[in-house]
Structure formats: structure tokens, C-alpha cells
Image (cartoon, rainbow, N blue to C red; front, side, top):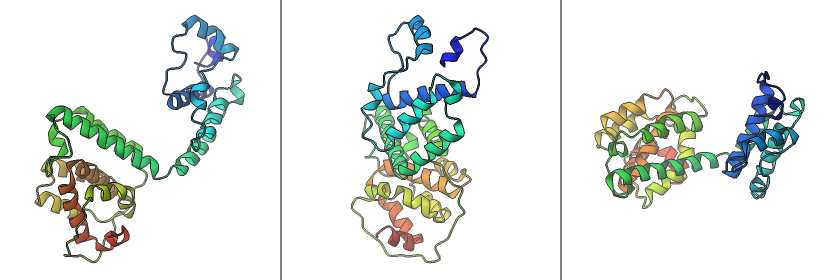
Length: 267
């Protein structure tokens, strides 16, 4: 709650109220802490209007990271005690887009790593075994867990989704078999590139189903996405945790249908 909200009981929230709250959210993200933890509520009510803000030492330690100084500056402008001096959300969006562009590619890779760890944890918790071992087994078979559903729908659709591309086709097909020792690492390294290239994906999905890599349920889930990027993303997210054998199968299928893409990826 911003300092002006403590001025009188009939205060009505404004956009500036939300901007102040957004600043507190930034502090929480950078610090990983809850603001004013352990401080008596009455003290907070008294001191916030007099300029108290969450502990800056907990966020200043990240100043050596790129764009963090800019995030801190935006945060302090957004929680200014004078509402008229705070940034508007249009200005915040410009700054956030600049930050996102600076981390382009890294965000998707970081989210991918987190999702894979969550799926591995979910699988190991339910099956008491490492998720990387059951080659050829659909990860979703570990259970109808709410965790997996949330990861697919919320993370993939809302966080990673950027564009709505059209399908493009590779006119050439290749029957040449390729050997990649670390196929899982190959797919992880090229995760973003494969999605950005937007290769036609229907034939790949059909082959995955024919070779029992995908169940009918997972096939329907992937095909339910309206964009080719979403279909590719969920396919990779489902194949990578299955292990090297499944990853090698996908690489072989991709090379069979899109050899030019594989050459572009260094194969």
C-alpha cells in the first residue's frame, strides 16, 4: 500500500497506487524476501508515509548483474512518495522491454531448465527413479499431476509464447541417419533456434506417434495448440526429459523431414 493510502480512511486506489505496488513487487523479485518482515504492522503504517521503504541492501548486492541497476532505478521511481512523480506503466513497459531484449534467449533457456527440473522432480517423486532413465516413456504418464498441467499451460503458453508464426515447409527430405552422442544436450542448446525456425511439424508428430514416443493423449495435447511454435515447444518439453534414446529418435526424425534445418543447426 502506498503512503497516500494511509492519509485518510476514504482513500480510493488509483493507477499510481498500482505503480507503487509494482515497485514493491520488483523489490521482492530482486531480494527474494518479504518486505518489512518481522516489523510491527503499526510501525509500518507510521513509517511508510515518512519515507521508509524495503531494505535496499538486499537488492543492491545484485547491481553487478546486467540490467539490475536499471530495474532498481525503475523501482525507486515507482515508489516515490509523491504519486505524480512516479512512472506510468507505459514508461515501465518500455524499460521492461529493453531489459527483456538484453536477456533475449537467456530467459527461454532459464525457463526451460526450471521446467525440466520440475518435471524430473515430479517424476522422481512419484516413481522413485530418475526421470532421465525411462527412454520411450511419456513423461506425462507419471501421473495426472497438477504440476505438469500448470507447467504446460501457464509457463509455456503465457511466459515463453511470443509470436504466432505460419508453418513453413522443407521441400527436401533425407533418409540419411545421423549419430549424435548427446542428443539431449543438442536439443536443449538449440531449443530456441528450432522454435524460431518454425519447421513444419505435423509429419514429425506423426512419426513420433508411430514409433511410440508419443501417446495419443500427448499427440492430441500438442496438436491442440493453435500455433506451430507452441506445438514445437511442447514437443521438445516432452521429449527432452525422456532421455537420450527418445532425443536421438527426434533428432533422426527432424533430419529426415528437415535436413536443411539440421544443417543450419550444425549437423
